[in-house]
Image 1 (cartoon, rainbow, N blue to C red):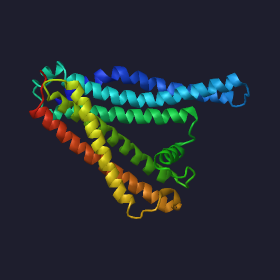
Image 2: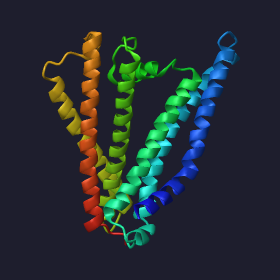
Image 3: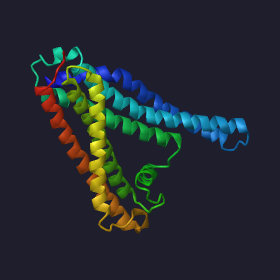
Image 4: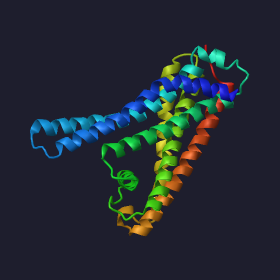
Length: 270
């Protein structure tokens, strides 16, 4: 039965997300072409067109991520929290299967979005190779030097870690939203408002817990990342990735059990 649920969820989401996946790489190629045509030109209009195309391409990268997250959340809400929920909860499937169906679809589309954005950046010429992509990602996230010496093998492992971390963070965000909606639907009145309120409650609680954990870690005399030499810096990035993945996985588990418990015992669709 899980297979049938997955088939329906993929069919319902693919019609929206696949056109986005097709458009972003094409826009990346177009951006590369326009940039090459404009790089030797000094006219203000030409430079403005090049800057505008690059800006639109950057927005498309963000739009692909936002579309994926919003679509996964809306699919969960419409399928389980509205009138469709009356039908879904009468099917011969468990609550776990209903949640896992949404999560598996989310994992596939998160990976697809990450791959499409990475491919689009490479096609646009913004990054020379996947080593440069890894450098850019860590320079932006952890404020480490962009020109750190890094081999292809090291870049590959770091890229794999980044993919896992991004997917787990996306799942944690989805599960946190699922939990907030499940809690909000347990109320008889103002269900939408209560869902929003509990989303921010869970969000703030998560931020406070992360701040406390990282405060304790970096309060033990740890050396700032940019001040380290190349090898300790790479080791530090491996450690940060591992800790980040473990923390995101812990949040995923917590929000999953919270969502599961609310859907089984406290859901109110009236």
